[in-house]
Amino acid sequence: MTSLLEMREISKTFPGVRALDRVSFDLRPGEVHALVGENGAGKSTLMKVLAAVYPAGTYGGEILVDGKVRHFAGIRDAEAAGIAVVHQELSLVGDMTIGENIYLGREPRRFGVVQWEALFSRAQRLLEELRLNLDAHTPVSHLGIGQQHLVEIAKALGRDARILILDEPTAALTESEADILFNILERLRARGVGIVYISHKLDEVFRLADRITVLRDGRSVSTDPKTSLNTATVIARMVGREVKDLFPTAVRAPEDIVFEARGVTVEDPNVRGKMLVSNVSFQVRRGEVLGIAGLVGAGRSELLMGIFGAHEGPHSGEFFVDGKRIDIRHPSEAIKHGIGFVTEDRKRYGLLLDQTLVKNMTLATLPLKRKLLVDLESETAEGERSMRELRIKAPSVFVDAMTLSGGNQQKVVLAKWLLTHPRVLFLDEPTRGIDVGAKLEIYTQINELAAQGLAIVLVSSELPEVMAMSDRIVVLHEGHVTGEFTRSDATAEKVMACATGQSKVA
Image 1 (tube, rainbow, N blue to C red):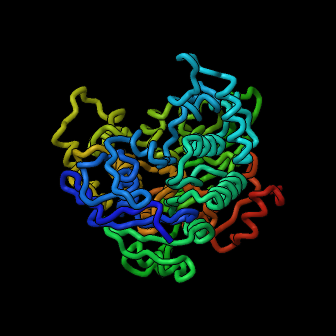
Image 2 (tube, helix red, strand yellow):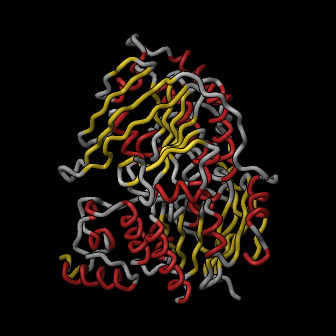
Image 3 (cartoon, rainbow, N blue to C red):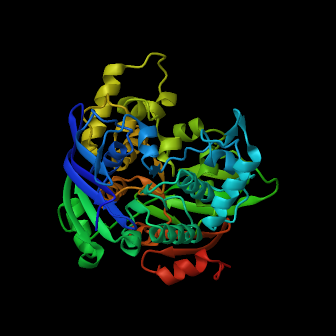
Protein backbone atom coordinates (compact mmCIF):
# COMPACT_ATOMS: atom_id res chain seq x y z
CA MET A 1 0.00 0.00 0.00
CA THR A 2 1.24 3.48 -0.90
CA SER A 3 2.17 5.58 2.11
CA LEU A 4 0.19 8.72 2.86
CA LEU A 5 3.13 10.03 4.88
CA GLU A 6 6.82 9.21 5.10
CA MET A 7 9.36 10.67 7.51
CA ARG A 8 12.87 9.62 6.50
CA GLU A 9 15.98 9.75 8.68
CA ILE A 10 14.69 12.63 10.84
CA SER A 11 17.27 14.11 13.23
CA LYS A 12 16.76 16.98 15.65
CA THR A 13 19.26 18.48 18.10
CA PHE A 14 18.75 20.90 20.97
CA PRO A 15 21.60 22.44 22.99
CA GLY A 16 23.25 19.52 24.74
CA VAL A 17 20.61 16.98 23.65
CA ARG A 18 20.14 14.91 20.48
CA ALA A 19 16.37 14.43 20.64
CA LEU A 20 16.01 12.48 17.36
CA ASP A 21 18.66 10.37 15.67
CA ARG A 22 17.73 9.33 12.10
CA VAL A 23 14.17 8.29 12.94
CA SER A 24 12.00 6.91 10.12
CA PHE A 25 8.22 6.59 10.28
CA ASP A 26 5.42 6.12 7.76
CA LEU A 27 1.62 6.21 7.74
CA ARG A 28 -0.85 4.60 5.35
CA PRO A 29 -4.34 5.81 4.40
CA GLY A 30 -7.00 4.46 6.78
CA GLU A 31 -4.39 3.26 9.30
CA VAL A 32 -4.01 3.84 13.01
CA HIS A 33 -0.25 3.77 13.60
CA ALA A 34 0.68 3.88 17.29
CA LEU A 35 3.86 5.66 18.36
CA VAL A 36 5.05 4.51 21.79
CA GLY A 37 8.11 4.99 23.97
CA GLU A 38 9.22 6.30 27.32
CA ASN A 39 8.95 10.01 28.06
CA GLY A 40 11.96 11.59 26.41
CA ALA A 41 12.06 8.93 23.69
CA GLY A 42 11.36 11.57 21.03
CA LYS A 43 7.68 10.99 20.19
CA SER A 44 6.49 14.56 20.69
CA THR A 45 9.59 16.00 19.02
CA LEU A 46 9.00 13.83 15.95
CA MET A 47 5.40 14.99 15.70
CA LYS A 48 6.42 18.64 16.18
CA VAL A 49 8.74 18.22 13.20
CA LEU A 50 5.84 16.84 11.18
CA ALA A 51 3.48 19.64 12.26
CA ALA A 52 6.17 22.28 11.49
CA VAL A 53 6.40 23.51 15.06
CA TYR A 54 10.03 22.94 14.13
CA PRO A 55 10.03 24.19 10.52
CA ALA A 56 12.09 22.99 7.59
CA GLY A 57 15.76 23.81 7.98
CA THR A 58 15.81 23.19 11.74
CA TYR A 59 16.10 19.39 11.44
CA GLY A 60 17.75 16.77 9.27
CA GLY A 61 15.97 14.29 7.00
CA GLU A 62 12.90 14.71 4.80
CA ILE A 63 9.11 14.53 4.93
CA LEU A 64 7.00 13.18 2.07
CA VAL A 65 3.22 13.54 1.73
CA ASP A 66 1.62 11.50 -1.08
CA GLY A 67 5.12 10.64 -2.26
CA LYS A 68 6.25 14.25 -2.67
CA VAL A 69 8.94 15.91 -0.55
CA ARG A 70 7.50 18.78 1.44
CA HIS A 71 9.25 21.68 3.18
CA PHE A 72 6.90 23.24 5.71
CA ALA A 73 7.90 26.76 6.70
CA GLY A 74 5.40 26.84 9.54
CA ILE A 75 2.30 25.34 11.13
CA ARG A 76 -0.06 26.80 8.51
CA ASP A 77 1.87 25.04 5.73
CA ALA A 78 1.47 21.70 7.52
CA GLU A 79 -2.25 22.35 8.10
CA ALA A 80 -2.67 23.21 4.40
CA ALA A 81 -1.17 19.80 3.60
CA GLY A 82 -3.92 18.15 5.71
CA ILE A 83 -1.94 17.61 8.92
CA ALA A 84 -3.73 18.27 12.21
CA VAL A 85 -2.45 17.78 15.76
CA VAL A 86 -4.48 17.37 18.94
CA HIS A 87 -2.12 18.10 21.82
CA GLN A 88 -2.53 17.10 25.48
CA GLU A 89 -2.75 20.81 26.32
CA LEU A 90 -6.00 22.35 25.14
CA SER A 91 -5.89 25.34 22.80
CA LEU A 92 -9.56 26.28 23.12
CA VAL A 93 -10.80 29.75 24.10
CA GLY A 94 -13.13 29.31 27.07
CA ASP A 95 -15.16 32.48 26.48
CA MET A 96 -16.00 31.44 22.93
CA THR A 97 -18.63 28.94 21.78
CA ILE A 98 -17.87 25.48 20.42
CA GLY A 99 -18.56 26.67 16.87
CA GLU A 100 -16.34 29.74 17.21
CA ASN A 101 -13.51 27.57 18.51
CA ILE A 102 -13.82 25.01 15.71
CA TYR A 103 -13.48 27.67 13.01
CA LEU A 104 -11.28 30.15 14.87
CA GLY A 105 -9.13 31.92 12.28
CA ARG A 106 -11.03 30.20 9.44
CA GLU A 107 -14.45 31.80 9.83
CA PRO A 108 -16.62 31.80 6.68
CA ARG A 109 -16.77 35.42 5.46
CA ARG A 110 -18.51 37.41 2.81
CA PHE A 111 -17.09 40.80 1.89
CA GLY A 112 -14.99 40.53 5.07
CA VAL A 113 -18.01 39.94 7.32
CA VAL A 114 -18.25 36.71 9.33
CA GLN A 115 -21.22 34.59 8.25
CA TRP A 116 -22.30 33.42 11.71
CA GLU A 117 -25.23 31.34 10.55
CA ALA A 118 -23.02 29.40 8.13
CA LEU A 119 -20.33 28.99 10.83
CA PHE A 120 -22.68 27.49 13.39
CA SER A 121 -24.44 25.38 10.77
CA ARG A 122 -21.13 23.86 9.63
CA ALA A 123 -19.97 23.33 13.21
CA GLN A 124 -23.24 21.63 14.18
CA ARG A 125 -23.06 19.40 11.11
CA LEU A 126 -19.50 18.39 12.05
CA LEU A 127 -20.53 17.61 15.64
CA GLU A 128 -23.39 15.47 14.33
CA GLU A 129 -21.07 13.63 11.92
CA LEU A 130 -18.83 12.82 14.89
CA ARG A 131 -21.95 11.87 16.88
CA LEU A 132 -21.11 14.34 19.63
CA ASN A 133 -24.28 15.34 21.45
CA LEU A 134 -23.27 18.99 21.79
CA ASP A 135 -24.75 22.34 20.71
CA ALA A 136 -22.36 24.45 18.64
CA HIS A 137 -23.65 27.59 20.43
CA THR A 138 -22.52 26.33 23.87
CA PRO A 139 -19.59 28.24 25.44
CA VAL A 140 -16.57 25.97 25.85
CA SER A 141 -16.28 27.09 29.49
CA HIS A 142 -19.56 25.25 30.19
CA LEU A 143 -18.08 21.90 29.12
CA GLY A 144 -16.25 19.35 31.21
CA ILE A 145 -12.57 18.74 30.49
CA GLY A 146 -13.33 15.51 28.61
CA GLN A 147 -15.90 17.20 26.37
CA GLN A 148 -13.40 19.97 25.68
CA HIS A 149 -10.91 17.38 24.43
CA LEU A 150 -13.56 15.97 22.08
CA VAL A 151 -14.21 19.50 20.80
CA GLU A 152 -10.46 19.88 20.25
CA ILE A 153 -10.61 16.78 18.04
CA ALA A 154 -13.60 18.21 16.17
CA LYS A 155 -11.62 21.43 15.66
CA ALA A 156 -8.77 19.46 14.09
CA LEU A 157 -11.14 17.56 11.81
CA GLY A 158 -12.83 20.81 10.83
CA ARG A 159 -9.68 21.54 8.84
CA ASP A 160 -10.38 18.50 6.61
CA ALA A 161 -7.34 16.74 8.02
CA ARG A 162 -6.03 13.69 6.18
CA ILE A 163 -3.31 13.05 8.76
CA LEU A 164 -4.48 13.28 12.37
CA ILE A 165 -1.98 13.19 15.26
CA LEU A 166 -3.41 12.40 18.70
CA ASP A 167 -1.10 12.91 21.69
CA GLU A 168 -2.42 11.07 24.81
CA PRO A 169 -6.01 11.74 23.70
CA THR A 170 -7.74 9.84 26.54
CA ALA A 171 -5.68 11.21 29.45
CA ALA A 172 -8.57 13.46 30.56
CA LEU A 173 -11.48 11.38 29.23
CA THR A 174 -13.92 9.25 31.18
CA GLU A 175 -14.49 5.68 30.01
CA SER A 176 -17.67 6.67 28.14
CA GLU A 177 -15.94 9.65 26.50
CA ALA A 178 -13.05 7.40 25.47
CA ASP A 179 -15.54 5.04 23.82
CA ILE A 180 -16.95 8.01 21.87
CA LEU A 181 -13.42 8.85 20.71
CA PHE A 182 -12.71 5.26 19.66
CA ASN A 183 -15.91 5.19 17.59
CA ILE A 184 -14.88 8.46 15.92
CA LEU A 185 -11.48 6.98 15.06
CA GLU A 186 -13.08 3.91 13.50
CA ARG A 187 -15.21 6.13 11.23
CA LEU A 188 -12.18 8.23 10.29
CA ARG A 189 -10.22 5.09 9.50
CA ALA A 190 -13.03 3.99 7.17
CA ARG A 191 -12.84 7.38 5.41
CA GLY A 192 -9.12 6.88 4.71
CA VAL A 193 -7.76 9.30 7.31
CA GLY A 194 -4.31 8.28 8.58
CA ILE A 195 -4.04 8.49 12.38
CA VAL A 196 -0.89 8.68 14.49
CA TYR A 197 -1.85 7.56 18.00
CA ILE A 198 0.54 8.43 20.86
CA SER A 199 -0.35 6.86 24.20
CA HIS A 200 1.17 5.28 27.29
CA LYS A 201 -1.99 3.18 27.70
CA LEU A 202 -0.94 0.00 25.95
CA ASP A 203 -4.41 -1.55 26.24
CA GLU A 204 -5.68 1.28 24.02
CA VAL A 205 -2.75 0.88 21.64
CA PHE A 206 -3.50 -2.83 21.15
CA ARG A 207 -7.21 -2.11 20.79
CA LEU A 208 -6.84 0.52 18.06
CA ALA A 209 -3.52 0.24 16.24
CA ASP A 210 -2.75 -1.54 12.99
CA ARG A 211 0.99 -1.08 13.45
CA ILE A 212 3.15 -0.06 16.41
CA THR A 213 6.42 1.87 16.23
CA VAL A 214 8.64 1.96 19.31
CA LEU A 215 11.08 4.82 19.95
CA ARG A 216 13.82 4.76 22.58
CA ASP A 217 16.38 7.48 23.31
CA GLY A 218 15.53 9.34 20.11
CA ARG A 219 15.92 6.33 17.82
CA SER A 220 13.56 3.96 16.00
CA VAL A 221 13.62 0.57 17.71
CA SER A 222 11.01 -1.29 15.67
CA THR A 223 7.86 -1.08 13.55
CA ASP A 224 5.62 -4.15 13.49
CA PRO A 225 2.01 -5.16 12.89
CA LYS A 226 0.06 -5.27 16.14
CA THR A 227 -0.75 -8.92 15.53
CA SER A 228 2.93 -9.91 15.86
CA LEU A 229 3.42 -8.19 19.24
CA ASN A 230 2.27 -8.43 22.85
CA THR A 231 2.40 -5.99 25.77
CA ALA A 232 5.49 -7.53 27.36
CA THR A 233 7.45 -7.28 24.13
CA VAL A 234 6.50 -3.64 23.57
CA ILE A 235 7.42 -2.68 27.14
CA ALA A 236 10.77 -4.45 26.86
CA ARG A 237 11.54 -2.52 23.66
CA MET A 238 10.43 0.78 25.21
CA VAL A 239 12.67 0.53 28.26
CA GLY A 240 15.43 -1.64 26.81
CA ARG A 241 14.85 -4.33 29.41
CA GLU A 242 12.08 -6.59 30.65
CA VAL A 243 9.86 -5.08 33.32
CA LYS A 244 8.76 -8.15 35.22
CA ASP A 245 7.45 -6.34 38.25
CA LEU A 246 6.01 -2.90 37.56
CA PHE A 247 5.25 -2.31 41.23
CA PRO A 248 8.36 -2.72 43.42
CA THR A 249 7.52 -4.43 46.68
CA ALA A 250 8.20 -2.83 50.05
CA VAL A 251 7.65 -4.00 53.61
CA ARG A 252 6.73 -1.13 55.91
CA ALA A 253 5.91 -0.76 59.60
CA PRO A 254 3.95 2.51 59.94
CA GLU A 255 4.50 4.36 63.21
CA ASP A 256 2.65 7.18 65.01
CA ILE A 257 -0.10 9.23 63.35
CA VAL A 258 1.44 12.25 61.65
CA PHE A 259 -1.60 13.82 60.00
CA GLU A 260 -5.33 13.60 60.64
CA ALA A 261 -8.27 15.17 58.83
CA ARG A 262 -11.72 15.23 60.40
CA GLY A 263 -15.02 16.04 58.77
CA VAL A 264 -13.68 17.53 55.53
CA THR A 265 -16.41 19.10 53.40
CA VAL A 266 -15.84 20.79 50.03
CA GLU A 267 -18.50 22.66 48.07
CA ASP A 268 -18.71 23.10 44.30
CA PRO A 269 -17.60 26.69 43.55
CA ASN A 270 -20.03 26.90 40.60
CA VAL A 271 -23.14 25.30 42.14
CA ARG A 272 -24.17 26.68 45.50
CA GLY A 273 -25.00 23.92 48.00
CA LYS A 274 -23.57 21.08 45.89
CA MET A 275 -21.10 19.10 47.99
CA LEU A 276 -18.12 17.53 46.23
CA VAL A 277 -16.77 16.08 49.50
CA SER A 278 -18.98 15.39 52.53
CA ASN A 279 -17.69 14.73 56.05
CA VAL A 280 -14.58 12.75 55.08
CA SER A 281 -12.07 11.79 57.78
CA PHE A 282 -8.78 9.88 57.62
CA GLN A 283 -5.41 9.45 59.34
CA VAL A 284 -1.97 8.73 57.90
CA ARG A 285 1.04 7.51 59.85
CA ARG A 286 4.76 8.05 59.64
CA GLY A 287 6.21 5.70 57.02
CA GLU A 288 2.78 4.81 55.60
CA VAL A 289 1.25 5.14 52.13
CA LEU A 290 -2.49 5.77 52.38
CA GLY A 291 -4.30 5.26 49.08
CA ILE A 292 -7.43 7.21 48.13
CA ALA A 293 -9.42 5.31 45.50
CA GLY A 294 -12.63 6.11 43.64
CA LEU A 295 -14.08 6.71 40.20
CA VAL A 296 -14.13 10.01 38.29
CA GLY A 297 -16.22 12.52 40.25
CA ALA A 298 -15.72 10.76 43.58
CA GLY A 299 -14.09 13.86 45.08
CA ARG A 300 -10.52 12.58 45.51
CA SER A 301 -8.69 15.61 44.11
CA GLU A 302 -11.18 18.01 45.69
CA LEU A 303 -10.50 16.40 49.08
CA LEU A 304 -6.76 17.09 48.85
CA MET A 305 -7.26 20.57 47.38
CA GLY A 306 -9.66 21.44 50.19
CA ILE A 307 -7.25 20.28 52.91
CA PHE A 308 -4.36 22.14 51.28
CA GLY A 309 -6.34 25.39 51.17
CA ALA A 310 -6.25 25.49 47.37
CA HIS A 311 -9.85 24.71 46.40
CA GLU A 312 -11.87 27.59 44.95
CA GLY A 313 -15.13 26.57 46.62
CA PRO A 314 -16.07 26.80 50.32
CA HIS A 315 -14.40 24.08 52.36
CA SER A 316 -14.07 23.14 56.00
CA GLY A 317 -12.65 20.53 58.37
CA GLU A 318 -10.33 20.00 61.29
CA PHE A 319 -6.67 19.18 60.71
CA PHE A 320 -4.01 17.86 63.06
CA VAL A 321 -0.24 17.40 62.72
CA ASP A 322 1.34 15.25 65.45
CA GLY A 323 -1.90 15.58 67.41
CA LYS A 324 -1.83 19.38 67.39
CA ARG A 325 -4.68 21.17 65.65
CA ILE A 326 -3.63 23.47 62.83
CA ASP A 327 -5.43 26.05 60.69
CA ILE A 328 -5.05 25.96 56.90
CA ARG A 329 -6.66 28.80 55.00
CA HIS A 330 -4.06 29.08 52.23
CA PRO A 331 -1.46 26.76 50.65
CA SER A 332 1.36 28.77 52.28
CA GLU A 333 0.00 27.73 55.70
CA ALA A 334 -0.12 24.07 54.63
CA ILE A 335 3.51 24.32 53.52
CA LYS A 336 4.57 25.85 56.86
CA HIS A 337 2.89 22.96 58.68
CA GLY A 338 4.90 20.42 56.68
CA ILE A 339 2.42 19.43 53.98
CA GLY A 340 3.48 19.07 50.34
CA PHE A 341 1.17 18.56 47.36
CA VAL A 342 2.08 17.09 43.96
CA THR A 343 -1.07 18.12 42.06
CA GLU A 344 -2.94 16.18 39.38
CA ASP A 345 -2.21 18.68 36.59
CA ARG A 346 1.52 19.32 36.76
CA LYS A 347 1.55 21.79 33.85
CA ARG A 348 -1.28 23.93 35.17
CA TYR A 349 -0.64 23.83 38.92
CA GLY A 350 2.79 22.28 39.45
CA LEU A 351 5.21 24.04 37.10
CA LEU A 352 6.16 27.37 35.61
CA LEU A 353 6.96 25.95 32.20
CA ASP A 354 8.85 29.01 30.97
CA GLN A 355 11.10 29.09 34.04
CA THR A 356 14.27 27.13 34.78
CA LEU A 357 14.34 23.86 36.69
CA VAL A 358 16.11 25.47 39.64
CA LYS A 359 13.44 28.17 39.93
CA ASN A 360 10.71 25.56 39.79
CA MET A 361 12.41 23.34 42.36
CA THR A 362 12.86 26.12 44.91
CA LEU A 363 9.52 27.85 44.37
CA ALA A 364 7.68 26.18 47.26
CA THR A 365 10.48 26.93 49.73
CA LEU A 366 10.14 30.72 49.29
CA PRO A 367 7.35 31.04 51.93
CA LEU A 368 9.66 29.25 54.38
CA LYS A 369 12.60 31.63 53.87
CA ARG A 370 12.80 34.75 56.01
CA LYS A 371 15.51 36.49 54.03
CA LEU A 372 14.33 38.95 51.41
CA LEU A 373 17.25 38.09 49.14
CA VAL A 374 17.46 34.61 47.69
CA ASP A 375 20.86 32.89 47.86
CA LEU A 376 21.25 31.89 44.20
CA GLU A 377 24.35 29.78 44.85
CA SER A 378 22.55 27.82 47.56
CA GLU A 379 19.46 27.42 45.36
CA THR A 380 21.57 26.08 42.51
CA ALA A 381 23.30 23.58 44.79
CA GLU A 382 19.93 22.37 46.12
CA GLY A 383 18.56 22.02 42.61
CA GLU A 384 21.58 20.09 41.35
CA ARG A 385 21.43 17.75 44.34
CA SER A 386 17.73 17.08 43.69
CA MET A 387 18.47 16.51 40.01
CA ARG A 388 21.02 13.82 40.92
CA GLU A 389 18.91 12.15 43.62
CA LEU A 390 15.77 11.94 41.47
CA ARG A 391 17.74 11.13 38.30
CA ILE A 392 16.19 14.00 36.32
CA LYS A 393 17.38 13.88 32.71
CA ALA A 394 18.29 17.42 31.64
CA PRO A 395 21.44 19.22 30.46
CA SER A 396 21.43 21.43 33.59
CA VAL A 397 19.19 23.03 36.20
CA PHE A 398 19.13 26.18 34.08
CA VAL A 399 17.05 24.81 31.18
CA ASP A 400 13.34 25.67 31.09
CA ALA A 401 10.86 23.13 32.44
CA MET A 402 8.98 23.04 29.11
CA THR A 403 11.96 21.35 27.43
CA LEU A 404 11.69 18.22 29.59
CA SER A 405 9.65 15.07 28.98
CA GLY A 406 6.54 14.47 31.07
CA GLY A 407 8.24 12.00 33.40
CA ASN A 408 11.12 14.36 34.10
CA GLN A 409 8.72 17.27 34.62
CA GLN A 410 6.94 15.16 37.24
CA LYS A 411 10.25 14.56 39.00
CA VAL A 412 10.87 18.32 39.07
CA VAL A 413 7.49 18.83 40.78
CA LEU A 414 8.37 16.11 43.29
CA ALA A 415 11.77 17.73 43.90
CA LYS A 416 10.06 21.07 44.57
CA TRP A 417 8.07 19.59 47.44
CA LEU A 418 10.87 17.46 48.85
CA LEU A 419 12.97 20.60 49.23
CA THR A 420 10.35 21.88 51.72
CA HIS A 421 11.20 18.84 53.93
CA PRO A 422 7.53 17.86 54.35
CA ARG A 423 6.11 15.63 57.08
CA VAL A 424 3.15 14.69 54.86
CA LEU A 425 3.13 14.44 51.05
CA PHE A 426 -0.06 14.43 48.97
CA LEU A 427 0.42 12.73 45.59
CA ASP A 428 -2.50 13.26 43.20
CA GLU A 429 -2.20 11.02 40.11
CA PRO A 430 1.64 11.09 40.28
CA THR A 431 2.08 8.79 37.25
CA ARG A 432 -0.60 10.21 34.94
CA GLY A 433 0.67 10.68 31.40
CA ILE A 434 4.13 9.19 31.98
CA ASP A 435 5.60 6.04 30.52
CA VAL A 436 6.28 2.64 32.05
CA GLY A 437 9.93 3.27 32.87
CA ALA A 438 9.23 6.64 34.50
CA LYS A 439 6.36 5.08 36.48
CA LEU A 440 8.73 2.49 37.91
CA GLU A 441 11.11 5.24 39.02
CA ILE A 442 8.26 7.17 40.70
CA TYR A 443 7.07 4.00 42.48
CA THR A 444 10.60 3.31 43.71
CA GLN A 445 10.86 6.90 44.95
CA ILE A 446 7.54 6.59 46.83
CA ASN A 447 8.80 3.49 48.61
CA GLU A 448 12.10 5.17 49.48
CA LEU A 449 10.32 8.25 50.89
CA ALA A 450 8.01 6.11 53.02
CA ALA A 451 11.03 4.15 54.28
CA GLN A 452 12.56 7.47 55.36
CA GLY A 453 9.47 8.16 57.49
CA LEU A 454 7.41 10.38 55.22
CA ALA A 455 3.62 10.02 55.51
CA ILE A 456 2.17 9.77 51.99
CA VAL A 457 -1.41 10.16 50.73
CA LEU A 458 -1.70 8.70 47.23
CA VAL A 459 -4.65 9.42 44.92
CA SER A 460 -4.82 7.30 41.78
CA SER A 461 -7.51 6.40 39.25
CA GLU A 462 -5.52 3.27 38.33
CA LEU A 463 -6.77 0.53 40.65
CA PRO A 464 -3.71 -1.76 40.28
CA GLU A 465 -1.49 1.20 41.20
CA VAL A 466 -3.36 2.25 44.33
CA MET A 467 -3.69 -1.38 45.51
CA ALA A 468 -0.03 -2.25 44.94
CA MET A 469 1.47 0.90 46.45
CA SER A 470 -0.78 1.49 49.48
CA ASP A 471 -0.64 0.11 53.02
CA ARG A 472 -4.28 1.13 53.53
CA ILE A 473 -6.95 2.24 51.06
CA VAL A 474 -9.84 4.64 51.69
CA VAL A 475 -12.53 4.47 48.99
CA LEU A 476 -14.72 7.44 48.00
CA HIS A 477 -18.02 7.48 46.12
CA GLU A 478 -19.75 10.77 45.33
CA GLY A 479 -17.80 12.58 48.04
CA HIS A 480 -18.43 10.04 50.81
CA VAL A 481 -16.20 7.36 52.33
CA THR A 482 -17.70 4.00 51.38
CA GLY A 483 -14.93 1.66 52.47
CA GLU A 484 -11.51 1.27 54.04
CA PHE A 485 -9.16 -1.67 53.61
CA THR A 486 -5.71 -2.80 54.67
CA ARG A 487 -3.37 -4.02 51.94
CA SER A 488 -3.99 -7.65 52.89
CA ASP A 489 -7.80 -7.26 52.90
CA ALA A 490 -8.15 -5.27 49.68
CA THR A 491 -9.27 -6.96 46.49
CA ALA A 492 -10.16 -5.34 43.19
CA GLU A 493 -13.74 -6.56 43.58
CA LYS A 494 -14.14 -5.10 47.09
CA VAL A 495 -12.62 -1.74 46.19
CA MET A 496 -14.67 -1.43 43.00
CA ALA A 497 -17.87 -2.33 44.84
CA CYS A 498 -17.26 0.55 47.25
CA ALA A 499 -16.20 2.89 44.44
CA THR A 500 -19.51 2.29 42.64
CA GLY A 501 -21.56 2.82 45.79
CA GLN A 502 -22.61 -0.81 46.12
CA SER A 503 -21.12 -1.17 49.60
CA LYS A 504 -21.41 1.43 52.35
CA VAL A 505 -19.56 1.69 55.62
CA ALA A 506 -21.71 1.68 58.71
